[in-house]
Length: 431
Image 1 (cartoon, rainbow, N blue to C red):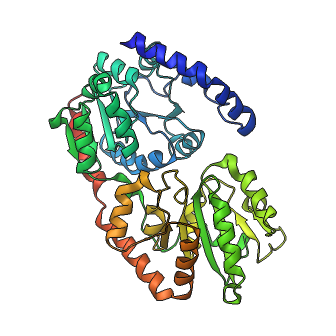
Image 2 (image 1 turned 180 degrees about the vertical axis):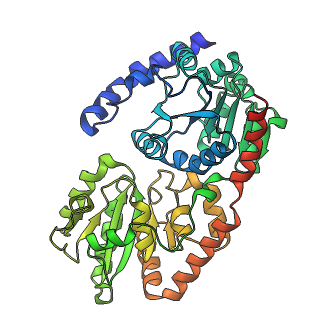
Image 3 (image 1 turned 60 degrees about the vertical axis):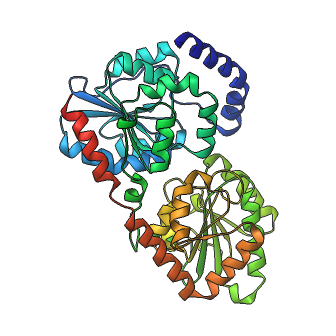
């Protein structure tokens, strides 16, 4: 079976290699971590027992932050190593954990690469955030008698449909997972359907509710406001936006600005992917709107005072929460286009009136929880976004009520970290 999986990977690698080359040349991606991707990983303290935590990208890394801190408190004799898949995930993991632990790119899932990686890391336990089914990773862990625990487990509608088509092939891999700590009963049922032993699947809730920090202010937000000349006006923040979505947002903003009652309104767009910053900047200018790139003024106290009418492009990493904290209203992106949405918990936890489109299917559980309590607003297209924004910006009491209900949804769903830690503690104590 390993031979078959390796052949599939080899074929896929050859098929998609032109895409990798294009993205490397066009977007400066995939330039780092090649040695790590082939299993060349070193630990900081090989004498200690080790926990291998894998978190695909930024969202999963952020969800792991509190979990790692709690495990460190209880098991100070263990060392962590943290792997990620994406460049942004690697940057975030390095910022959170790089000072203490080894952070590296997840190795390619060839059987020989995984054997090499496990030999060098020698983990006592593997924690997979949410779930990526890497057959050789799970198989090698099983052969090495290393328990694999899925934390914050979820399987999206799309992934579940794909897995079910190959259920007979992958059932054995799911059966080798030692414990699944699922976000919801629905997700738990999907893990069981795909082959995880029923008694090894437990519902603990979503860690992301715990990492959504409920607060009225964010450190550094006032500095950002000063750098961008935001004092006194209303701010619409469109965060985590995706392909072509910014065009819709810019058209809506331009229409709003034609109304004198929105003369003080500013727009800040923070695209999800850094490689799109230049593209979005061009769109802003092509629509005849003044542009202010935050990267040009960040940390420069002597810069000229920015144009108070400029559209702000948040083209830096790690500042989205600061933008959200200053917002009058928030639109959470990748949802007006069929891209699955972005995390709306952060905006809701900050007490912001949160809007998103109809395509936030990767966050369906959160969407349902917020909409059930009228703690957020869903729009179907740009025209409806225009109507809802007008309502929220002209009726502050309405917007504040939506925001308050959204924050309460976050508070009501917190507590998953403690439940997750209890189950992981039982595993670690048995090692």
